[in-house]
Structure formats: C-alpha cells, structure tokens
Length: 188
Image 1 (tube, rainbow, N blue to C red):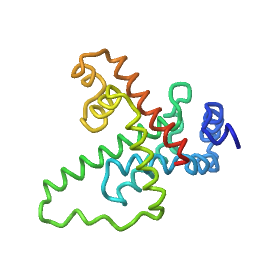
Image 2: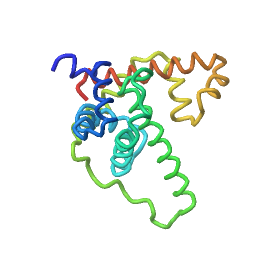
Image 3: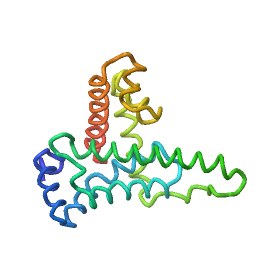
Image 4: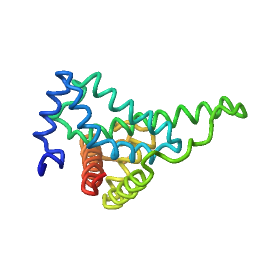
C-alpha cells in the first residue's frame, strides 16, 4: 500500500485512465481516499450537513461524468477536488443566502438535519483543515480567502494585493496543496 496510499502522482495518472475508461471501481477508490478531505472542506463553508453531502456528491459526480476535466499533468487530484468543492460550497452558500433574503419568513431554510453519519471523522477533518490553514503563511491564507470566500477571481485578487496574477495562482496552488497534504497526513 505504501506509496499508493499517499496519492502518488503515478497512482493519480493510472486512476485517471481508469476513470476515462468508465471503471466504477476507480471512482470508488477515489471516494474512499478523498471523501473525508472533500467533506471537511465543504463543512468549513456550509452549516447544513445535507448541503455538505450534496456538494461532496456533486464534486465526485462531476469527476465521474467528465473525467477529462481533471488534468493530472497540471494538478494533484486532492488539489483539484478541494478546488471543486470550494467552488461548489461557496456557490451553494451564496445561493442559500440569496434564498434566505428573498424568502424571509417562509421557513424555506430548515435546521441542519442532525449529526453526520461519521461525526468523529468530520470533526477530525475540520481539526486537520484548521491545522493546515494555521501552518500557511499569511500571504497564502489571504490569497485563499480573497478567492474562495471573498468572491474574487485570481485576477481581481492580484489587483487587490498589488501582485502579479502568476503570484496569486502560485499562492493558491501552494495553499490548496498544503491543505490536501495536511489532511492526507492526518489520514482524513
């Protein structure tokens, strides 16, 4: 299991080929390896466990339906999944906030539906994500914040920070990789 467990680049390339061939077992292996990571990141953005589960499902479904959207030469798989879940969760949070504003008093937003099936794993994932964020430089955290919670694209984030677009992309890649690696080291 050794190198395979850690999500090596070679393993990612092989599983990508299997996904493109329509091999369902490849998706199962990916899910087993990365679901807790993706869930922990979604839970940082969303308060509703059903929404978190929906976002996790959407990200893996996207990869299954369109495996060509992932390029193993450009991204590590954990980074690609975390980026996708950040986008999906952020969009879901914005949509929910918009609905709350337009349906005020209608009861459209329900209470969170209790504990997650794996609440201990979710709590471990959140702690691991916090530790990964804490280990990042302030510059990296600020870039991630502007893009993933500040609703700026990388170009506007670069302008706001007074740095090049390339530098913002570098900080985003670095931060997402640190988050992915930190959660993987913790076994999440």
